[in-house]
Image 1 (cartoon, rainbow, N blue to C red):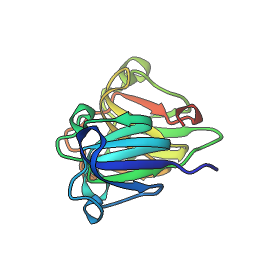
Image 2 (tube, helix red, strand yellow):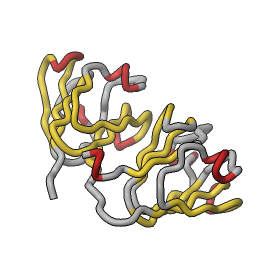
Image 3 (cartoon, rainbow, N blue to C red):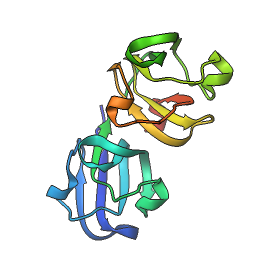
Amino acid sequence: MTMGKIIFYEDRNFQGRSYETSSDCADMSSYLSRCHSCKVESGCFMVYDRNNYMGNQYFVRRGEYSDYQRMGMSDCIKSCRMIPMHRGQFRMRIHEKENFGGQMHELMDDCDNMMDRYRMNECQSCNVMDGHWLMYEQPQYKGKMMYLRPGEYKSFRDMGMSGQRFMSMKRIMDSCY
């Protein structure tokens, strides 16, 4: 399995000091005083504008990201998580209410509009059984996003996603790498 590699830079347009990693980093300040741009040489990562994988999230894959503000970050990049490649099936159960309450639907593929497909106008908890997923606040994979790996998510509000609604979800496929 190939590892990802990402290089972070203190300033916009890949200027200033840099820090390179192939793994998760909960607090960038150990390496850089600030982080305003990054280059992904391989693999896929989520970058966050708060420590410990909190705050606004942005999915990055092979390419150059010259300005954190263009990514929808309110502050500079403060933490990152490497997304391992998943081969095999994808499976997730989405629930209308917290603690797996209300309507439930099982997904095995991308869903560009939860309301159209399931007549569900809210998703407040989910259980990811297989694969890695991105959830988006608007239909058609737009707006703020959240990365989910296998596990139970009883309350998006408790994860710091208060007031956030998710309307579409996409699998992180090996074609992303």
